[in-house]
Figure 1 (spheres, chains in turn yellow, red):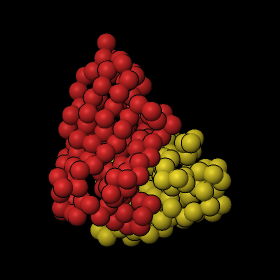
Figure 2 (figure 1 turned 90 degrees about the vertical axis):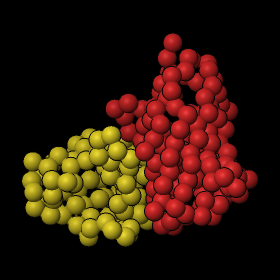
Figure 3 (figure 1 turned 180 degrees about the vertical axis):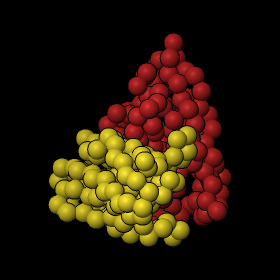
Length: 110
Length: 120
């Protein structure tokens, strides 16, 4: 399974919006809408932010939203805050009970 | 509160073996599929292996197939990963991860991880 493709870095100023893309092949996304996004601060465990493309777990601010079009999924963070600075990973179910992650995107809040 | 506590990491020589454990609490362990996910130093996340609720079905990434064995003990709420024939490229932080709290195909909680270093 080949990794999903994410930009290595994105940045934005407080209050702005940023979008992180995640592109895969048809087999990676498997025709399913089972893409999730996690946030990882340095030295910490990942935290689930979006699941099944666009759903938010309880406790995640509604500033975080997800979408998918064709072979590209996206995570949008609106109203950027300093605490949003972290690495973000997309992950997709790849069939046969296997999963594939993106390479990760470092978000810098300027 | 879901808690996943990994242990067993350390320094091992190439070709050696190591067994990781994960103690789970705060949820009904036997009701959820589990996974191991790793992260090489300065690199991204990589799904390594998964196991069904009963332990009867196991799944592996191509990179570890034939060398790693995942297992679980539902009576003790414990997940394990037996790692054999270790290589330098297996050096990583290994996270125990829970699946299924938000749909069957979502990893929803990770432990804090345990570091495995493969080096002579």
